Image 1 (cartoon, one colour):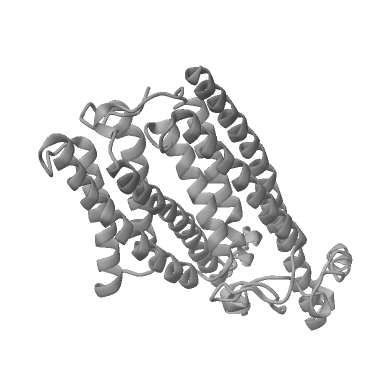
Image 2 (cartoon, rainbow, N blue to C red):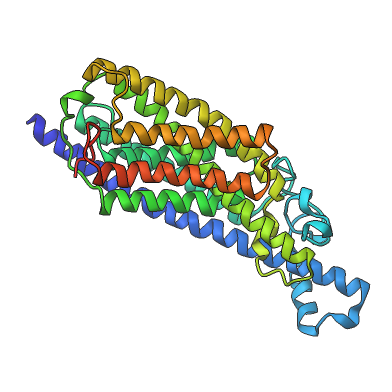
Length: 361
C-alpha cells in the first residue's frame, strides 16, 4: 500500500513537472516578445530623432513606422529601456528611460509583455515547486538523491532565485535566458535522467545530504544567473564595439540590456555570494565524507571537480579584485566556472566511476 502511494505521488510529480515546463515555455515566449516589441519601439524612437534632425535622410516607410509607435507608454511615447546606456555612446540612441537604469532598478513605466512573462514564471515556479514537493513525499525524503532529482530541484531553485532577485532589481531582460535554461534543465531531467522514485543508497542516508546538497543547489542556481549575465556581457561589449566603429547594430534587443559594465558588476557580486556557498559545499562535503567513509578527502573524481570549480571561481574573484581582470576576461572566467559546474554534474556523474556515482541511471 505504501509503495502504491509513493508511486502515485511520483506520477503526480511528473505531471507537475510537465505542466511547469509548459508554463515556462509560454513565459519564455512572452519574455522574447517583450524583447522584440521593445526593440522595435526603440528603433522607432531613433527614426523619429533622425527625422527631427534631417527628415530627408529617413525613408518614408520608416517615418510611418515611427509614428505607429507613438502610443507607447511613457513621456512622449518613449520606449522603456535602461537609462544607463541611453547615450549615443552606449549605442542606444535618443529617448527617455522608464525602466531599469544602470543599477537595474525599476522605473515608473510598465511593459505589458514583461509583466505577463513574470506572472507566468511565478505560476510555473509554483507548479514546479508542487512537483518537487510531491517527489519528496513520494520518496519519503529530500528530493535530491539522484541526477533527475538534483536537476529538477536545481531548475526550481534557479527560477525561484531569479524571481526573488526581481523584487529588488529589474532583471527582466534576463528572463528569456534564465527561463530558457530552466526549460532545458527540465527537459534534460525528463528525457536523459529520469529515475523512478526509490530509496537512497546507504551512504546518502544522512542529515548531511540536506546540508551539503541544498547549499550546492543554491550556489549552482546563483552561478546559473551569473552565467547568463556574463554571456550577455560579452554580447553587449561586442555590440557596442561594433556600433562605436560605425558598424550596423544587428542586435536591437540588446538595447534593453544595461551596459556591459553594469552586468559585470552585478555578476561579480552574485558570484561572490555563490562562491561562499560553494566553499561551504566543499567543507560540508569533506565532513560528510569523513563520517561516511572515514576520510575527509580521497581524490574521488567528484571531489576533485568540486575543488576545481572552487579554484576557478576563486581565481575569478581574485583576478577581478586585485589583478584588474575586468571586461571580457572576467566574463569568460565566469563562463568557464559555470561550464565546470555543468561538466561536474553531467559528465562526471555519468561516465566516471567513484564513490559519488549516484546518478540513478
